[in-house]
Length: 198
Ligand SMILES: [Zn+2]
Image (cartoon, protein in one colour):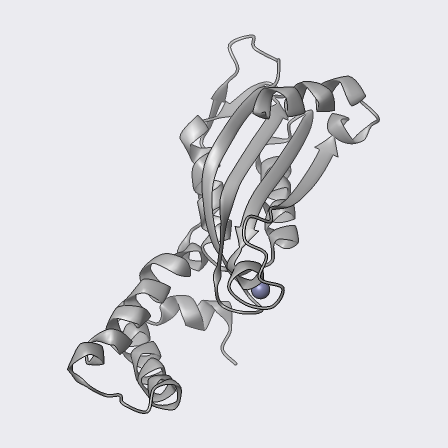
């Protein structure tokens, strides 16, 4: 098993080639008619999709995303809601798809709004479970912004629940992580957040 440093050193083409070889072997077991013309480019295409898109978050320097600036006297709640979320369930390697809502109370400095969406993307483009993903976003906000409070709510539909197993399409899983003043029995702030993301 390689370390994360070794993983980052490997160049992208090498990773795509290696993953492509594994996908090619897998296809033979899944479909007795492969390889055939329709699937001849599938291994490389699938490998590229996993490396360059679905698992691209490992390459992102999350701390580097937190370029901050002064809050210009604004110290109310800041909410970025309905951030599209596409992640990959680490148990089944199928996507879970939904939205993230992130709110915080600044403590003198604020982060660019688009950067919050980038943080969500950096952690979701990995093998995940929704619970850990929720917490990682909240921890990154807390560590890099030291806000007075932060709240993260994720709502997602898991394909491993809709195309297999219990097969319950439309089921949403909602998770939340709260830090700082949101965690201190401040029902008013929590209610305000929930009202605003509805
Ligand atoms: Zn799953």
